[in-house]
Image (cartoon, rainbow, N blue to C red; front, side):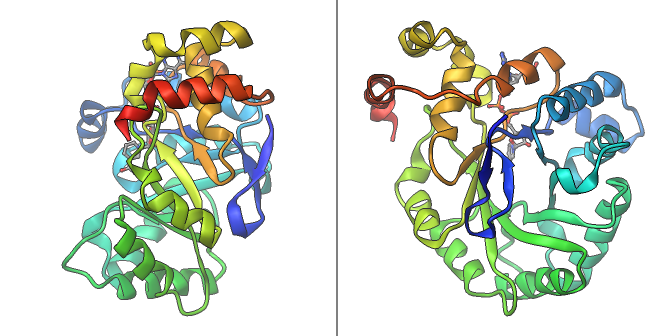
Length: 277
Ligand SMILES: NC(=O)c1ccc[n+]([C@@H]2O[C@H](COP(=O)([O-])OP(=O)(O)OC[C@H]3O[C@@H](n4cnc5c(N)ncnc54)[C@H](OP(=O)(O)O)[C@@H]3O)[C@@H](O)[C@H]2O)c1
């Protein structure tokens, strides 16, 4: 697995990461303490770590922090890049700090590499949230600050609201099928050295069977999902985080690293999906 600089942070992170949002029934069941299927999910994350993926994305709302913790046991913590998120109802200073401490416990760790605002909350000033993040960074419990589902304007505000630290990443939907981020967010990230975590990198699974990927997959002797993830990973600051819920899929997704699309492949894919920008 190739490592790539997490934009201006300079930290080397696997160019393909793992997402751990499963589905609403899993989340709902978790509130009642039901964890059916947990073992397979831990095995999937473990398979990802074993194949060299170091970046794993979770969130307080996903009911998957404890699964990530189980997969990290016995591993060198400093080799991993654990990202979590704070839900939009916890963006006031004290709420955020409380939520962070709970995530630390569930993740069985003393620090989180990347803590992201999951969704903006118009009722809470971005500055207040960012100052709380800054406080956690100064305490050494948090390495990097990120946001998710922010507009360009909100992103700029967050980027200028951290008194001592810096905004390291943004997380948004981005794939061959969903290219809206190319309009304004991605150029801003590239200019500012902000890493971009691409969620729904396989368009929630739809790209796995999209015939427009056939030719590039055949030319490279790769699967369609590997081509779709490769297309994202080749962008300087972009890190796809496909969902890791089955070892077989995770291992296939890890195979999107370590090779390159040709200019022909890239141009063909670009043309085939361009109408969707
Ligand atoms: N910030 C946000 O608001 C936000 C929102 C949504 C998602 N996310 C993050 O982004 C991650 C990814 O999103 P997502 O999981 O919905 O979409 P996705 O990764 O685009 O697609 C996941 C789907 O693709 C399938 N898949 C993955 N690898 C495959 C392979 N090699 N071959 C065939 N099928 C494959 C998965 O099946 P299996 O599960 O059966 O492997 C699942 O059905 C989430 O887990 C989460 O961490 C963030």
